[in-house]
Image (cartoon, rainbow, N blue to C red; front, side, top):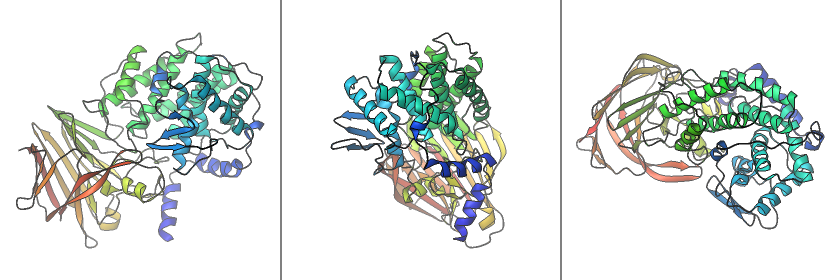
Length: 531
């Protein structure tokens, strides 16, 4: 009970005052909300919008399979007689996906099916069976408006429900959550304002978008939640705004948005490997965001330039030499007031050689607040050092972080980094120093624990291998051989253990993979080279 209180206290103290105020207000308000009471825009006429390319960045395929059957997050479900739009047997995120209506943009689904789903949901929303929530409302409005713009679909229930949701969203912006939710809210509100030709909504959302993109896009072009997946989702929506504005006679200077989009494109290219995949950092996984190649193709069609960027403010570093690519997490938990997608993974790294993943981490398979979620956010689930099984930072409750470790960069140059964090100092009296040096055909990692030991400790350097790697541990020599081409050797270790872990290759998809745990007292040198 005391630990829970401390975790809560150390989480809340980072929040903005507005977050706390709106968290309380929305909790009190939510149970009394009726979407039919939001009637401000019922007399506005809907106008179609033109989006030539950016709609392609909304993943829509294979989500509605016909006959009331849906598939989201690699879990399928068929409703028997009617759709339960509140269905949560597979968790809240599955239900959110059900309500997003991405499948409206799937050209393989017959229009009568789409219109039946639209009508059914609209009726359930208007009669109060379905309670609106700002985030799914934001994504749903975009999809509904794109479908309307492409087909001219008209229905009294559909149009009334759409306009009610615009007014609802305007009055329920997610100030309590912030971050990507806030951007999704304002993007949806802006696009809705254009479709309704309402100057008040347009002006309000436009100014908020400029402010939020200025705050949330870091100097190196990364979105401040430092997740390649959410970065890609937000970038896709930003490109949608640019696409819509440039295809009709709107009086907006898009130079600022274009600049932000280009900076974000540069970061995406920098964080990605040569095969145009990104590491699954901070809740990133496959199947949710548009692929890098698709984003770059649409960017080219929109005449957006991808500048060369160097990873820095987002906390990541990338080494590349020949076929070797190394990505290192050397940043603090960001943003401090919304760390919901952060993992306890300071000084963890990813290794890819010749476009083949070698070292990964457990990834993300669920957002439900359960044991699996705790494991996947833990320090031991990443390629870094853990003491006595403890986390560097207090990740808890699915999306919460209490006490946070802090990073210090000591030396930072091309293909070399020396850094430390204080995540274990408070409990164990030790700081973890780690250096990386990439040279031709080899990577050397040096781990040092510095400080006076407060208690007995078991220090482990974890190495999570990709599911397709073939691992041979030679206990006699203390070496690991990977795919008959790579050799891992250690100096300073006490023992080496090989075990199995579950690698997340998507939501609700786990595959057996190999983890090697190297125990050492204070100093460990790991050398990875071709054998």
